[in-house]
Amino acid sequence: MELHIIRHGKTMANEQRLYCGQTDLPLSDNGTAELVKLKNQGIYPKSASLYITSGLLRTQQTLRLLYGSVQSEIIPQLMEYQFGSFEMKSHDQLDGQADYQAWIDDAVGHFACPGGESKQDFNLRADEGSKLLLSKAQQGVSVLAVLHGGVIAFIMEHLFPDKYNFYEWQPAPGRGYSLTCAPDGSMQFLKI
Image (cartoon, rainbow, N blue to C red; front, top):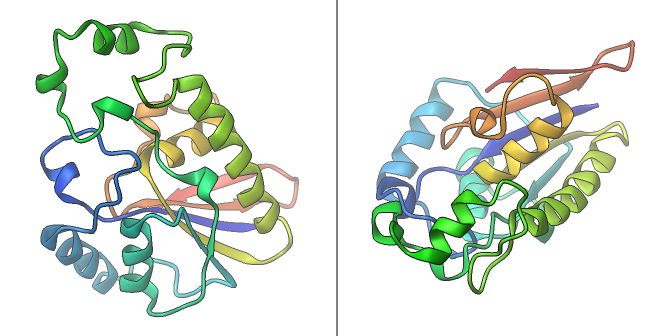
């Protein structure tokens, strides 16, 4: 098994530290420039047998920028968290609102963002998407997926539960992980 998971490049929301889940933003000029720089450094796998995105514009643009006009599959279950009414707002804009505080304090993950999803809903959806992704990688082909920070963190935390926590697994924009399966069946990763 060979699976490469890359986070999309920066968007305006990343630069302004806004919650941006399923708002379909393009890459920012800085995000595009950073991806070109990383590509020129040769940090990305040369190619893959199968390319996958979440279908959101920023993942599609990142894939095209790094690999040209390759054909790709979309797994919509791998879209980022749906922040509902918190979408495109910063922590400072939301701080002090009761529903925002309830969402942050919800350690179990039952509280949904108004008009969005709960952490538990996200986990169920991301689990379904990651199982589809892993099943494709286990078919003996090299798979490269351009996804979102929260989804990548979910996948890595579930594959390597004792290594890092969810937030520590989130790669910077344009970064990610290469996963391989050792002969003994154990999973290994390298940072991209």
